[in-house]
Structures are given as structure tokens and as C-alpha cells.
Image 1 (cartoon, rainbow, N blue to C red):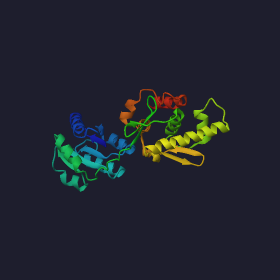
Image 2: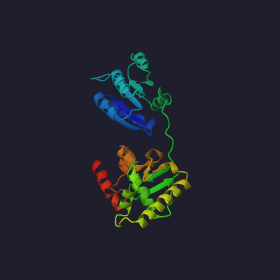
Image 3: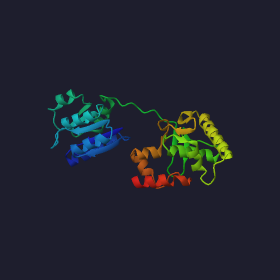
Image 4: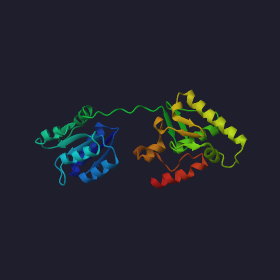
Length: 263
């Protein structure tokens, strides 16, 4: 859940921040003492719930709420205020809550339970790919075994390409960089592709891979990956990156340098 809080009073903002963290421990929370900065953030990030003070200097909470809903119409607005006279205007905007300060943990929890735009739970993804450190694959949190180390390396390369279609010659040149292409190498590659499909089929995860004539790719939406979350600025994934990416594969060094740079 992507949540923001806005209040131009420092102590009030700190108070609502601590309250939200206790009421919604799994959320991603960003706090702003300036409405303009909240709007800038919303333009780059989908805000699902916004806790807004009404009395702010440069822009009141009702105006800020309208701006946020203009950016993303399904943003749930919860007003936090010390005054009751704005309640009618607030609920005319289909607000999900109108909480009187000081805001309690129970009040925030209740507002989340009755959001005007209910949050749809994301279905869990059975396949989890770890790229930070060594490359590993887990299905239902159990390691997926590959009968050949090169099969695992093939899958690692496809994951690194994040859904881009990779032609056979490109893959062969990457994972056998020290060998010249030959019919024997092409045949070995075909065995790897068959072996990869077999490994994924064995755990009913065949939807992770797509094969077209002369091309292979992964389907990023069908599994979770720490690198993908990192590139999407997920805080937990950014913090988990310790400067190593697919450490067992030399061809991953360029991507590791890129991740280090954007971190």
C-alpha cells in the first residue's frame, strides 16, 4: 500500500507518521510538510491512500485532495484536522475518513477498513527469483533444482533481460563466451532450453517462460524478482542490494555496475 501524509506542522506530521506506521505496518509511507511536494510525488507514484491536514498555509487539504484525485482518481482521501466545520465539504469529495486530531491508531485502522476505493489484494507469486548475491530461484519458497548448471545460467540471463526477447545466437554468445559457435554448441543449447522448460513444468511454473521461433524470454509479471523491485524503487529491495548481482556469472558485471550507479 502506497500511503502519503501531509501536514504543515512538524509535530503534527510526526504524530500522524508514527500513528500510520503502527496502524498499517506493511505500507510504504512518505510524509510531506509542503502540499506542492506531495503533488510532485504523486505525479511519479500511484498514491492509494492520502492522510491530509485541512488547514495548511499555501494550499488547504481540500484543494490538495482535488489535485491528488486529478492525478489518480482512485486515491483514497482521509482528512486529519482539529476542526469539524469542513466535514460536509470533505465527504462531498467522497473522502474515506474525517479524523479529529489527535488521531488514534484505531481511527486509522477503521478508515483503512472502509476505504471508498477498496484496495485489491495482489495475488501471491509462487516463483521468487533472487539476483542479489548469487542467483537463486525459489518456488513456494523451496529452491528450484536444475539438472545442469548451464540451465540455471540460461534462466539467469533471461531474468536479467527482464522480458526482452533474446535470440538464440545472443544467448549462446553470452553463456559460452569462450567457445566458438558450432552445430554441437547449437545442439547443446537446444538441450538446455528443453531442460529449462522441464524444470519449470515440474513445479507448474511454465507461465514464467515464453518461447517463440528463434527467441526466448521470461514473463516478468509472473514471478517476483529483487532486481525488478530495485529498479522500481522498492525500499526493501534497494536496502537489500549490497553491491553484488548474480555474482557467479561474469557476464552480469555490467548490470551490477549499472545497479551500483543508480543506487
